[in-house]
Length: 237
Image 1: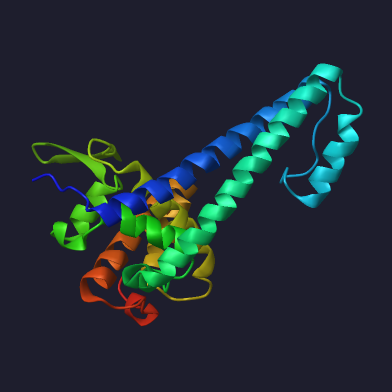
Image 2: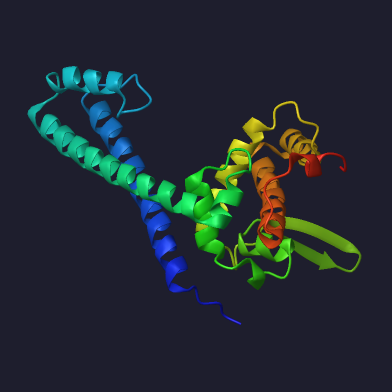
């Protein structure tokens, strides 16, 4: 059965997905600026092109560029500044909506989950009751690997991308990244699984594994109407 999001969910998706697209445009512009500078023999030493130090450096660099490169740099920077302002405005609205949404408030009690992550999860899932289990949610997010069976032989392959929600998958991986930083010295089962996967397979598979665990946590919290409880993560393996 095909689930159709209601008007509120549709509008939330438009909002969070538009911000995601603007961030992609911003990243693309930053790359093009660095390529433009490199073509004129300049390399910006600063990570954030919108930071104060980077902006000061770009002003000084502008005078050293060829006339064509200088014109292009100004155009790129104006576009980048405009996108930054739009993202800032969207972030303000997202924070307001996340504060007013009961499920988004619940999800923000998860360590490392901010208003944007919480509202994105709410927008992409819409109604938790349409998922029979946390396993169905993990599959919808595209975080479950394909399993190939032949007789008694079972082979676990790459992630099953046939029914994935790219927006949900992306935000869950980002949440896993932040969650991993906040786990600290806690003795949690999911932390032990994360580190085992990290040492055995590397950082990306470890984040995917942690993202699957976050699906279980999110499913239980939303279904039961509860906040994040670290005590429930202790024990187990």
